[in-house]
Image (cartoon, rainbow, N blue to C red; front, side, top):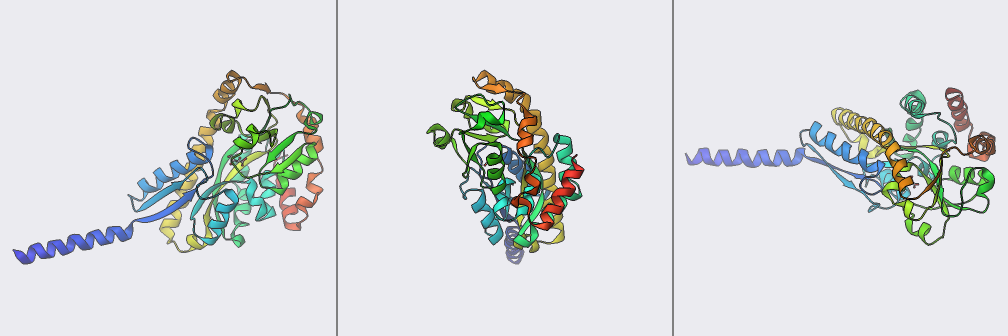
Length: 325
Ligand code: EAX
């Protein structure tokens, strides 16, 4: 009897040890706060992976930039101290010019085209291009089409941008775009509410959800639907960590992230009409039909600029422009 109790106890302890060993944890970082596009991806991924692995994987989401800004999180991902990030495409720019191709102005006509290209071979080529930097690009979710807001005046044409101090992401391409358009761009990491409120900057550009979640309607009177850049997130893992995983885990994690991304893109788009109404109700003056042709003209020769002087990146851009014509 005693022997049976002892062996039962040993089995229990062993079982516990095994299950503790089996539970693996991963950290996922986003710079934004709950309710944001990045957080929707992160939360969905956590839900799918924890359920899909029967609890063998535990995901801890670090949001609101507690791990640092997007550039800093990318550095942590390179080092392997952070396993996964849902990171806006823009800040990748300081690591490699290849991502400029998907941040190119007026590239995608609409959501369907963005999905088709990013989920296809061209999108994959860019994800693969991140590997030499220590990133495993898993897939794309979205911030969405970016629009301009500012506190000074109604903007309908590039001329209206003169002298406006616009915050841009930490990206040489975004800075170059806004210089070409005729504004006064300053790169700054997220978040930027205080800088807008104090007038350090007059305006910024982001998709509609940002104006709602971050309450920019309180401090930005004017919005122009420029849709100048489609802004993807790159859902990215640390390559060193990725290479340490077995095939089954790799497949499961990649599949859960893809599913989370598809879910989030749909969710984000579905909410846009209501957001526009809300922003209007909050008192924003919204220019829905600015002179987009004039904005496009200002950036028409960007493909020939220094931003794309790397021959490989230039070649990829040419193929991307052809595919999105
Ligand atoms: O998602 O820095 C930016 O403008 C990003 O779009 C920000 O993370 C909001």
